[in-house]
Length: 192
Image (cartoon, rainbow, N blue to C red; front, side, top):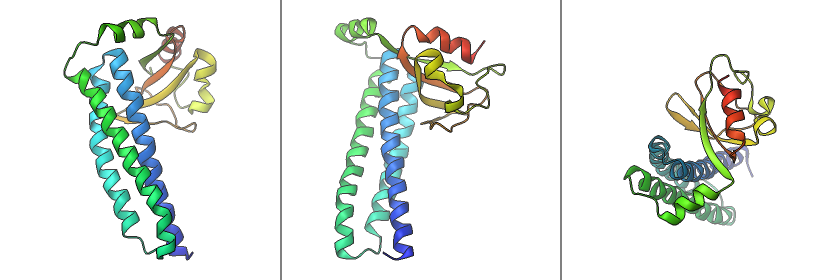
């Protein structure tokens, strides 16, 4: 494979990974919006759905317009199908969020399941005096300290799927999941 073809391949894979990661984030946020009955999270899902549609089109165009030989291009068929699946997951997440945005009352069974669940989803704003400020998620040890895992960070109106090297900033809203007992610990850590 030539250097140009290798660069094309890397670009296609990067687009796919972003597509997959964003659709996974959307599903996490959609369920979180449902569990918390939080319209702001549901709106984040809707915004991300539009982004995923654009991203999916870019991904498919990159794959289809690549200069690979016929035998090399066949390998991308599976990747394109995975891209379609990721886009369908994003659409499903948007449908879940739509329930919250329409104000549809959750079924009594869902309410009971939410009440009985040991795990919960919460969101906290990071205060200026928090020890989390300017630390990466890895350095912050949030799961060790609270039992909660950060699913997403809402920063300046955008939701991002964090990585271990993502730095926490003042006024970030951490959306986290974990055992209900950890919610108070996370709130104290983020906003002492």
